[in-house]
Amino acid sequence: MKRSHWIPTKDQAHLVQQVRVIQGEMGLAAAENLSTKVIEHMRALTRIVVEFNYYLQSDDHAADDLIRNYVCDSVAGANESFQYVNNAYRGFLDALPSKVDWSCNARQSLNDLKSAFRAQFEEFIVQKRFENKYRSLLDLYKLGLLYASLSYS
Image (cartoon, rainbow, N blue to C red):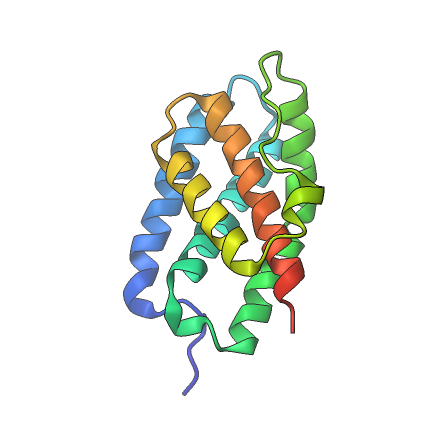
C-alpha cells in the first residue's frame, strides 16, 4: 500500500507543529498590517518553505524522481502566494532588500543552493523581528524556486 504523502508518518506531526508555530508567530505580527488574504498566502508559503527544508534535510528522497518532482511542483505552485506576499512586503516602510540575486544564484549548483537555503532557514527560525522574518521567508521561497528550476527531471 502506498503512502498518502511523501513525508513519512513519523515526521508529519513534528512538521505540522513547526509550520503552525511559525504561522502563528507571523500571523500575530502580520494581523495589524496585512489583509486576511495576504496572511493566508503567507501561511501557504510558510508550509511550502518548511516542507522544502525537510526535503533538503532528508537523504532518503534524494534519488526518488517522483518525490523530487512533487516537491518542485509544490514550490513552483506557490508562485501566486509569493506574489501576494511579496507585493504586500514592498509596501512596508522598512522593507529590506532581498539577499537573493537571481542572476548570481541561477549559476550555482544544487549543492550551493541547498547550502544557501539551509543557512537562510536557520536564520529564519531564530529571527524575532517580523519584518526580517518576512523578508527571510520571501528569500527562502526564491532559493527554493531556483533549486526546483534546476532539479526537475
